[in-house]
Amino acid sequence: MRLSLVVPCYNEALCVRRFWEAVRALALPCETEFVFVDDGSRDGTLAALRTLAREDATVRYISFSRNFGKEAALLAGLRKATGERVVTLDVDLQHPVALLPEMLATLDGGAYDCVAARRTDRAGEPWLRSQCAKAFYEILNRLSEVQVRGGETDYRMMTRQVVDAVLALPEVNRFTKGIYAWVGFRTKWLEFGNVERAAGETKWSFWGLVRYSLQGITAFSVAPLQLASVAGILSCVAALLYLTYVIFVTLIMGNPVSGYPTQVCLTLFFGGLQLFSIGILGNYLAKTYLETKHRPLYLIQEEH
Image (cartoon, rainbow, N blue to C red; front, side, top):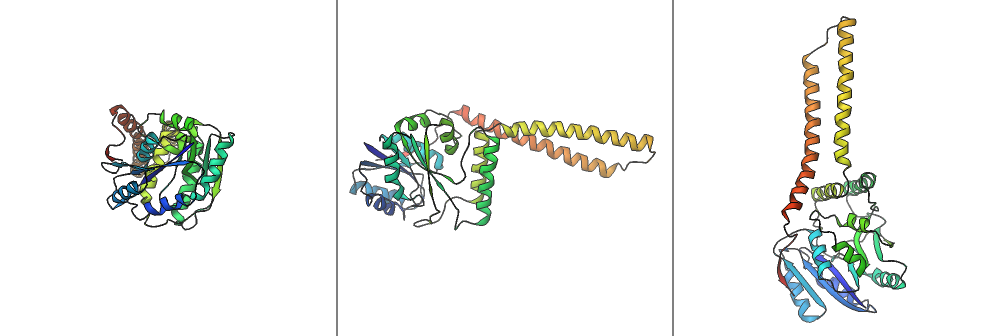
């Protein structure tokens, strides 16, 4: 039995060796294979991977021609992994490697096809980011056909069957957490407390997380399109009700209706509503456009 560890890296030169040493210290009861994916790092990450590959024959790496994002790095790693068991986890040790033996034992038991880990808290994170993350999961689960647990991470171990199912989805706009939920399979959840990074700083900015959240919602839900339709219907009903009010006040009550402020407010309201709806349509149209181009999700510059 071989275990493949798929490890995306972006400017993580300080963490690569620490991660490798932490996994080696576990003395896992199976053959291991490290599949590092250098996502176009600009520091010494690639040099650190080259050094490790010379020292350890089980270390493999891929280096992208530029930064293509974590979703592309995960996909590339899963494609290169050869083990019967495959685990994806971060190199910064925020995903506790101490859970690996329990994950292996769970899959070996045969009752589950996947073991996933979720954080029970967000200690140490900025308050605003934590609240936005909670709101994202709640909105996604309400709007989407798939259910993503709060605190869910990319840390999970899968059988070869699950990996093949994930790789069978050819979409370009990938939201891996949603893909895991969509393919299903029997999944056991493990919980862990938030762990600080071993070194370096997070590469996720606040607006980067916002864009990622929007991608997740639009990738597995058409509810925003339906929301635009509902908003249009409600605005028409509101306009008819207001028209009825104007007729009643003017013709029956004999009171003049102020025209200019009313006109300005209605124009701004309905103009904003139309632009909002067009923006939602444009977002989905852009995703369709990207899917039809059939561009590769990444380009490999170097591989060992």
